[in-house]
Image (cartoon, rainbow, N blue to C red):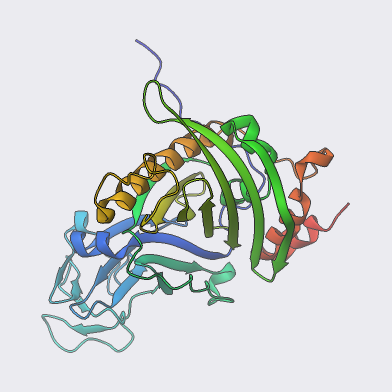
Length: 350
Protein backbone atom coordinates (compact mmCIF):
# COMPACT_ATOMS: atom_id res chain seq x y z
CA UNK A 1 0.00 0.00 0.00
CA UNK A 2 1.36 3.43 -0.92
CA UNK A 3 2.09 5.78 1.95
CA UNK A 4 -0.41 8.58 2.29
CA UNK A 5 1.15 11.93 1.28
CA UNK A 6 1.81 14.23 4.20
CA UNK A 7 0.57 17.84 4.11
CA UNK A 8 3.07 20.61 3.62
CA UNK A 9 4.05 22.33 6.86
CA UNK A 10 5.55 25.70 7.64
CA UNK A 11 8.02 25.66 10.52
CA UNK A 12 7.70 29.02 12.23
CA UNK A 13 8.43 30.51 15.62
CA UNK A 14 5.89 33.27 15.00
CA UNK A 15 2.73 33.28 17.13
CA UNK A 16 0.02 31.92 14.83
CA UNK A 17 -2.60 34.63 15.42
CA UNK A 18 -1.39 38.25 15.24
CA UNK A 19 -3.76 41.01 16.29
CA UNK A 20 -5.69 42.77 13.57
CA UNK A 21 -8.43 42.68 10.96
CA UNK A 22 -8.71 39.51 8.88
CA UNK A 23 -10.90 38.64 5.91
CA UNK A 24 -13.91 36.40 6.50
CA UNK A 25 -16.16 36.40 3.41
CA UNK A 26 -17.79 38.58 0.79
CA UNK A 27 -21.25 39.99 1.31
CA UNK A 28 -22.38 38.25 -1.89
CA UNK A 29 -21.19 34.87 -0.58
CA UNK A 30 -23.07 35.38 2.70
CA UNK A 31 -26.23 36.37 0.86
CA UNK A 32 -26.08 33.31 -1.39
CA UNK A 33 -25.30 30.88 1.43
CA UNK A 34 -27.87 32.18 3.92
CA UNK A 35 -25.74 30.82 6.78
CA UNK A 36 -22.00 30.24 6.55
CA UNK A 37 -19.58 28.56 8.92
CA UNK A 38 -15.82 29.10 8.86
CA UNK A 39 -12.76 28.04 10.82
CA UNK A 40 -11.13 31.44 11.37
CA UNK A 41 -8.30 32.40 13.72
CA UNK A 42 -8.48 28.97 15.34
CA UNK A 43 -12.21 29.16 16.13
CA UNK A 44 -15.48 28.16 14.50
CA UNK A 45 -17.59 31.16 13.49
CA UNK A 46 -20.93 31.62 11.75
CA UNK A 47 -21.94 34.45 9.43
CA UNK A 48 -25.37 35.57 8.24
CA UNK A 49 -27.36 38.72 7.49
CA UNK A 50 -30.88 39.93 8.22
CA UNK A 51 -33.37 41.36 5.66
CA UNK A 52 -31.97 44.87 6.28
CA UNK A 53 -28.50 43.66 5.26
CA UNK A 54 -26.99 43.75 8.74
CA UNK A 55 -24.12 41.23 8.88
CA UNK A 56 -23.48 39.19 12.01
CA UNK A 57 -20.31 37.21 12.72
CA UNK A 58 -20.35 35.17 15.93
CA UNK A 59 -18.63 32.25 17.62
CA UNK A 60 -20.42 29.07 16.60
CA UNK A 61 -21.57 28.15 20.12
CA UNK A 62 -25.07 28.62 21.52
CA UNK A 63 -24.90 30.29 24.97
CA UNK A 64 -27.80 28.14 26.15
CA UNK A 65 -26.32 24.62 26.21
CA UNK A 66 -23.38 24.85 23.81
CA UNK A 67 -24.84 23.56 20.57
CA UNK A 68 -22.95 24.16 17.35
CA UNK A 69 -24.65 26.87 15.28
CA UNK A 70 -23.43 25.94 11.82
CA UNK A 71 -25.61 24.58 9.00
CA UNK A 72 -24.10 21.09 9.25
CA UNK A 73 -25.34 20.89 12.85
CA UNK A 74 -28.83 21.86 11.68
CA UNK A 75 -28.86 25.59 12.46
CA UNK A 76 -30.73 27.80 10.01
CA UNK A 77 -31.68 31.41 9.41
CA UNK A 78 -35.40 32.20 9.50
CA UNK A 79 -36.60 35.77 8.96
CA UNK A 80 -33.09 37.08 9.56
CA UNK A 81 -32.73 35.25 12.89
CA UNK A 82 -30.31 32.42 13.59
CA UNK A 83 -32.20 29.45 15.02
CA UNK A 84 -30.31 27.02 17.24
CA UNK A 85 -30.92 23.38 16.20
CA UNK A 86 -30.92 22.09 19.80
CA UNK A 87 -33.75 24.01 21.55
CA UNK A 88 -34.88 26.52 18.92
CA UNK A 89 -33.45 29.65 20.54
CA UNK A 90 -33.58 32.56 18.07
CA UNK A 91 -30.81 35.16 17.77
CA UNK A 92 -30.92 38.51 15.99
CA UNK A 93 -27.89 39.96 14.21
CA UNK A 94 -27.21 42.00 17.37
CA UNK A 95 -26.34 38.63 18.94
CA UNK A 96 -29.20 38.84 21.42
CA UNK A 97 -31.53 35.88 21.92
CA UNK A 98 -35.01 37.31 21.36
CA UNK A 99 -37.27 34.23 21.42
CA UNK A 100 -37.46 30.61 22.51
CA UNK A 101 -40.21 27.99 22.03
CA UNK A 102 -40.56 27.68 25.80
CA UNK A 103 -40.82 31.27 26.98
CA UNK A 104 -38.95 34.54 27.30
CA UNK A 105 -35.15 34.18 26.95
CA UNK A 106 -32.69 35.27 29.59
CA UNK A 107 -31.13 38.68 28.95
CA UNK A 108 -27.71 37.10 29.29
CA UNK A 109 -28.41 34.73 26.39
CA UNK A 110 -26.25 36.46 23.81
CA UNK A 111 -23.85 35.22 21.16
CA UNK A 112 -20.14 35.92 21.42
CA UNK A 113 -19.77 38.39 18.56
CA UNK A 114 -16.82 39.19 16.30
CA UNK A 115 -16.42 42.90 15.54
CA UNK A 116 -16.81 43.45 11.81
CA UNK A 117 -15.84 46.03 9.19
CA UNK A 118 -16.99 46.01 5.57
CA UNK A 119 -15.02 47.48 2.66
CA UNK A 120 -16.28 47.22 -0.92
CA UNK A 121 -18.39 44.17 -0.03
CA UNK A 122 -15.46 42.46 1.73
CA UNK A 123 -16.20 41.52 5.36
CA UNK A 124 -13.39 41.62 7.90
CA UNK A 125 -13.36 40.56 11.53
CA UNK A 126 -11.23 41.87 14.38
CA UNK A 127 -9.08 39.45 16.40
CA UNK A 128 -7.64 41.09 19.52
CA UNK A 129 -4.88 39.95 21.85
CA UNK A 130 -6.55 38.59 24.97
CA UNK A 131 -9.93 39.29 23.39
CA UNK A 132 -9.54 43.06 23.53
CA UNK A 133 -11.64 45.24 21.16
CA UNK A 134 -10.30 46.89 18.01
CA UNK A 135 -7.32 49.17 18.56
CA UNK A 136 -7.40 50.69 15.07
CA UNK A 137 -9.55 50.62 11.96
CA UNK A 138 -9.07 49.73 8.34
CA UNK A 139 -9.00 52.88 6.17
CA UNK A 140 -11.55 53.55 3.46
CA UNK A 141 -10.33 52.90 -0.07
CA UNK A 142 -10.37 55.75 -2.61
CA UNK A 143 -13.79 56.55 -4.05
CA UNK A 144 -14.92 54.01 -6.63
CA UNK A 145 -16.87 55.53 -9.51
CA UNK A 146 -19.20 53.63 -11.79
CA UNK A 147 -16.40 52.91 -14.28
CA UNK A 148 -14.76 50.20 -12.15
CA UNK A 149 -15.46 46.50 -12.62
CA UNK A 150 -17.00 44.17 -10.10
CA UNK A 151 -14.60 42.31 -7.84
CA UNK A 152 -12.84 39.16 -9.01
CA UNK A 153 -11.80 36.95 -6.09
CA UNK A 154 -9.55 33.89 -5.95
CA UNK A 155 -8.73 32.00 -2.72
CA UNK A 156 -6.06 29.42 -2.01
CA UNK A 157 -5.34 27.57 1.27
CA UNK A 158 -1.86 26.51 2.32
CA UNK A 159 0.44 26.13 5.32
CA UNK A 160 1.87 29.55 6.13
CA UNK A 161 1.80 32.68 8.27
CA UNK A 162 0.40 36.14 7.42
CA UNK A 163 3.63 37.89 8.45
CA UNK A 164 5.61 35.77 6.01
CA UNK A 165 3.18 36.51 3.17
CA UNK A 166 2.97 40.25 3.97
CA UNK A 167 6.75 40.53 3.97
CA UNK A 168 6.62 40.24 0.17
CA UNK A 169 5.38 43.86 0.09
CA UNK A 170 8.90 45.07 0.99
CA UNK A 171 10.94 42.13 -0.32
CA UNK A 172 11.24 43.40 -3.88
CA UNK A 173 14.26 41.17 -4.58
CA UNK A 174 12.01 38.11 -4.80
CA UNK A 175 10.02 39.67 -7.66
CA UNK A 176 12.76 38.97 -10.17
CA UNK A 177 13.94 35.67 -8.66
CA UNK A 178 10.53 33.97 -8.36
CA UNK A 179 8.21 35.87 -10.72
CA UNK A 180 10.65 36.88 -13.46
CA UNK A 181 10.06 40.63 -13.16
CA UNK A 182 12.73 42.99 -14.41
CA UNK A 183 13.71 46.63 -13.82
CA UNK A 184 12.42 46.29 -10.25
CA UNK A 185 12.99 49.47 -8.22
CA UNK A 186 11.88 51.04 -4.95
CA UNK A 187 10.25 54.38 -5.76
CA UNK A 188 10.36 55.67 -2.17
CA UNK A 189 11.49 54.50 1.27
CA UNK A 190 9.00 52.32 3.13
CA UNK A 191 6.90 54.52 5.44
CA UNK A 192 5.21 53.47 8.68
CA UNK A 193 2.44 55.24 10.56
CA UNK A 194 1.12 53.13 13.45
CA UNK A 195 -0.59 50.05 11.97
CA UNK A 196 -0.17 51.36 8.40
CA UNK A 197 2.82 50.70 6.16
CA UNK A 198 3.29 51.97 2.62
CA UNK A 199 5.64 50.56 -0.01
CA UNK A 200 6.09 52.05 -3.52
CA UNK A 201 7.80 50.15 -6.30
CA UNK A 202 7.92 49.75 -10.09
CA UNK A 203 8.70 46.85 -12.39
CA UNK A 204 8.35 45.45 -15.89
CA UNK A 205 7.11 41.98 -16.70
CA UNK A 206 6.56 39.90 -19.81
CA UNK A 207 3.74 37.36 -19.95
CA UNK A 208 2.45 34.94 -22.57
CA UNK A 209 -1.15 35.61 -23.57
CA UNK A 210 -1.29 32.97 -26.31
CA UNK A 211 0.96 30.20 -27.56
CA UNK A 212 3.02 32.58 -29.67
CA UNK A 213 2.19 36.02 -28.25
CA UNK A 214 3.92 37.89 -25.44
CA UNK A 215 2.78 40.91 -23.50
CA UNK A 216 5.22 43.30 -21.79
CA UNK A 217 3.81 45.44 -19.00
CA UNK A 218 5.32 48.52 -17.35
CA UNK A 219 3.86 48.84 -13.84
CA UNK A 220 3.99 51.20 -10.86
CA UNK A 221 2.46 50.07 -7.56
CA UNK A 222 1.63 51.48 -4.15
CA UNK A 223 1.05 48.82 -1.46
CA UNK A 224 -0.94 49.93 1.58
CA UNK A 225 -0.37 47.33 4.30
CA UNK A 226 -2.65 47.65 7.34
CA UNK A 227 -1.88 44.93 9.84
CA UNK A 228 -0.93 41.46 8.68
CA UNK A 229 -4.28 40.51 7.14
CA UNK A 230 -4.90 43.43 4.80
CA UNK A 231 -2.90 44.74 1.85
CA UNK A 232 -4.46 47.11 -0.69
CA UNK A 233 -2.36 47.68 -3.79
CA UNK A 234 -2.96 50.39 -6.39
CA UNK A 235 -1.50 49.50 -9.81
CA UNK A 236 -0.90 51.67 -12.86
CA UNK A 237 0.16 49.99 -16.10
CA UNK A 238 1.65 52.74 -18.25
CA UNK A 239 1.94 51.22 -21.73
CA UNK A 240 -1.79 50.44 -21.99
CA UNK A 241 -3.14 53.05 -19.59
CA UNK A 242 -4.64 50.56 -17.16
CA UNK A 243 -5.60 51.26 -13.55
CA UNK A 244 -6.19 48.31 -11.23
CA UNK A 245 -6.74 47.67 -7.55
CA UNK A 246 -5.70 44.52 -5.76
CA UNK A 247 -6.42 43.27 -2.25
CA UNK A 248 -4.13 40.62 -0.80
CA UNK A 249 -5.88 39.13 2.22
CA UNK A 250 -4.29 36.48 4.43
CA UNK A 251 -6.44 34.96 7.19
CA UNK A 252 -5.18 32.27 9.59
CA UNK A 253 -7.43 29.22 9.72
CA UNK A 254 -6.23 26.93 12.51
CA UNK A 255 -2.72 27.99 13.48
CA UNK A 256 -1.08 26.11 10.60
CA UNK A 257 -3.12 26.85 7.48
CA UNK A 258 -4.02 30.24 6.09
CA UNK A 259 -6.53 31.29 3.45
CA UNK A 260 -5.04 33.72 0.94
CA UNK A 261 -7.63 35.67 -1.04
CA UNK A 262 -6.67 37.79 -4.05
CA UNK A 263 -9.32 40.35 -4.98
CA UNK A 264 -9.00 42.52 -8.08
CA UNK A 265 -10.88 45.39 -9.68
CA UNK A 266 -10.09 47.43 -12.81
CA UNK A 267 -11.10 50.80 -14.24
CA UNK A 268 -12.92 50.86 -17.58
CA UNK A 269 -10.60 51.07 -20.59
CA UNK A 270 -12.06 53.98 -22.55
CA UNK A 271 -9.14 54.76 -24.88
CA UNK A 272 -6.33 52.20 -24.37
CA UNK A 273 -2.91 53.33 -25.58
CA UNK A 274 -2.33 49.91 -27.17
CA UNK A 275 -5.54 49.21 -29.09
CA UNK A 276 -5.17 45.46 -29.59
CA UNK A 277 -3.93 44.60 -26.11
CA UNK A 278 -6.45 47.05 -24.66
CA UNK A 279 -9.26 45.25 -26.55
CA UNK A 280 -10.40 48.45 -28.30
CA UNK A 281 -12.11 46.26 -30.94
CA UNK A 282 -14.63 45.20 -28.25
CA UNK A 283 -17.46 47.25 -26.71
CA UNK A 284 -16.13 49.49 -23.92
CA UNK A 285 -18.30 47.92 -21.23
CA UNK A 286 -16.75 44.45 -21.58
CA UNK A 287 -13.07 45.37 -22.01
CA UNK A 288 -12.20 45.87 -18.36
CA UNK A 289 -14.06 42.78 -17.05
CA UNK A 290 -12.14 40.58 -19.51
CA UNK A 291 -8.79 42.13 -18.60
CA UNK A 292 -9.67 41.99 -14.89
CA UNK A 293 -10.28 38.25 -15.11
CA UNK A 294 -6.91 37.88 -16.81
CA UNK A 295 -5.27 39.91 -14.01
CA UNK A 296 -6.99 37.82 -11.31
CA UNK A 297 -5.82 34.57 -12.91
CA UNK A 298 -2.31 35.98 -13.34
CA UNK A 299 -2.11 37.09 -9.70
CA UNK A 300 -3.30 33.80 -8.22
CA UNK A 301 -0.83 32.02 -10.49
CA UNK A 302 1.98 34.12 -9.03
CA UNK A 303 0.72 33.45 -5.50
CA UNK A 304 1.00 29.73 -6.23
CA UNK A 305 4.65 30.33 -7.10
CA UNK A 306 5.11 31.98 -3.70
CA UNK A 307 3.26 29.18 -1.90
CA UNK A 308 6.01 26.74 -2.84
CA UNK A 309 8.35 28.91 -0.74
CA UNK A 310 5.94 29.99 2.03
CA UNK A 311 4.71 26.49 2.85
CA UNK A 312 8.23 25.12 3.32
CA UNK A 313 10.23 28.04 4.71
CA UNK A 314 11.50 28.55 8.25
CA UNK A 315 11.18 31.88 10.00
CA UNK A 316 14.67 33.26 10.63
CA UNK A 317 14.40 35.98 13.32
CA UNK A 318 17.89 37.36 12.66
CA UNK A 319 18.42 36.99 8.91
CA UNK A 320 21.84 37.56 7.32
CA UNK A 321 20.80 40.29 4.91
CA UNK A 322 22.51 41.89 1.92
CA UNK A 323 22.03 45.42 0.62
CA UNK A 324 19.54 44.31 -2.06
CA UNK A 325 17.13 42.93 0.54
CA UNK A 326 15.55 46.32 1.09
CA UNK A 327 13.73 47.19 4.29
CA UNK A 328 12.88 43.78 5.67
CA UNK A 329 13.99 44.62 9.21
CA UNK A 330 11.94 47.82 9.19
CA UNK A 331 8.96 45.70 8.19
CA UNK A 332 9.61 43.27 11.05
CA UNK A 333 9.83 46.12 13.56
CA UNK A 334 6.46 47.26 12.22
CA UNK A 335 5.04 43.73 12.71
CA UNK A 336 6.02 43.59 16.41
CA UNK A 337 3.04 45.76 17.40
CA UNK A 338 0.63 42.97 16.43
CA UNK A 339 1.91 40.49 19.00
CA UNK A 340 1.97 40.23 22.79
CA UNK A 341 4.54 42.24 24.76
CA UNK A 342 7.12 39.46 24.90
CA UNK A 343 7.17 39.33 21.09
CA UNK A 344 7.66 43.09 20.90
CA UNK A 345 10.62 42.85 23.25
CA UNK A 346 12.16 40.08 21.14
CA UNK A 347 11.95 42.20 17.97
CA UNK A 348 14.04 44.93 19.60
CA UNK A 349 16.96 42.67 20.47
CA UNK A 350 20.11 43.03 18.34
